[in-house]
Image 1 (tube, rainbow, N blue to C red):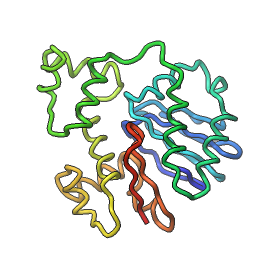
Image 2: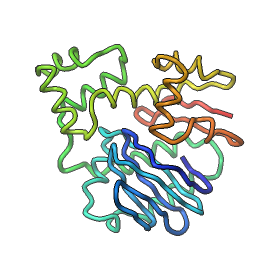
Image 3: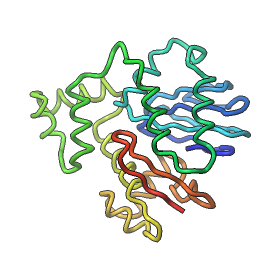
Image 4: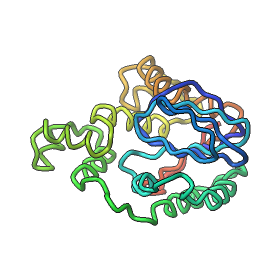
Length: 236
């Protein structure tokens, strides 16, 4: 998300966050720390709030995303390429559709292979869940040749999130990608696999301190599947 300013309440979501000020400093509370700097990395499941008076880029990176595993290994935020990040993000901030540039930007973040990537069995399970949301923990554990309890522990140890929370996170992603002009929140909730609209509302409030309509109000929002860079959806 590229926003002219941002001020949100404490919230906690499964995705890691890369927060980049495009001009000046951010004020970010992460768990019990208050940070004032131009770039902040927030690990999965950390409680966070952000205040920025100027333009800011908010990137949510899945806990199994290679770009996150590369970024998290940097010893300090000062080591991350802030000028290059700002330049790439400002190109995307002109209000025009840039699916190709967004994909290229993420590929640049992925270019530095992490020294300690997550366990391949966990990565494969995440990929399978994205492809088939009917899979459950028992099926994925069997595919990894592990007991359900061992697979559950391995998943949490590797990604820093529980399996249940990760599945809920994918439902939120699905809701955003399925959004179409004129679709009601009830229709969206059912399509994304939530019990009902209140369940969708509670989840999005807790994870993002907002519904998608808050970000879409008054502007065009482009949703790009950066895992394959093949799907683009517009919200008005």
